Image (tube, rainbow, N blue to C red; front, top):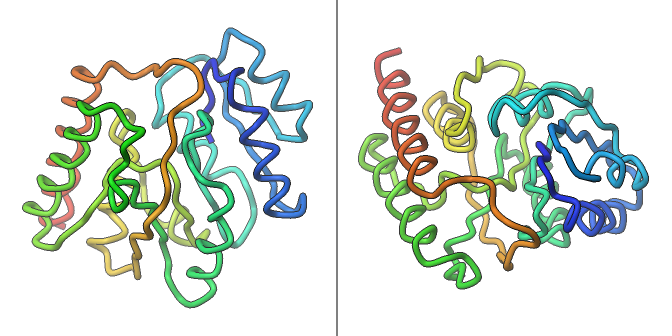
Length: 215
């Protein structure tokens, strides 16, 4: 996970991961915080890689490429994602899926601000139109990947990396499943400007989709 000033939530997230995995997960936090986030993460057993703040995609890309494990799981560190559903993701990978992507919108995502919910549905509609197949949630932060998937693709996006992490595997023939998940109100304040960030994500969806169609 990429972490940036999430001291209000990081401890709870790591406790949930510890409980659901019986302490067997290797947790990587790529951190650019100015608060106590990295200290709390280390106290909870996470490996912290400190870097200057460079954006969401830079941090998450470093995080997914660092561990040497057969399955890599991403999550946000704001306590919005249901770590208790993590075994479902791992079970789907063991069944043969290459990528399992959490679908926050399936259950309505009522805890998400209305503007963000509208934006995420618009991103999914845009991606679906460009790809010629239906996708439901392009910007979810909770996914599981086979290690070979994250190692085989040259990830390029920053703010839009979450969409790229779904679009490129889909278009390259990997077996991808969107899995419904619960979504709760975040702890702490969001760091992404909804207008500026939304435009960057939409641009990434168009860029990555067109690149993949032209490969």
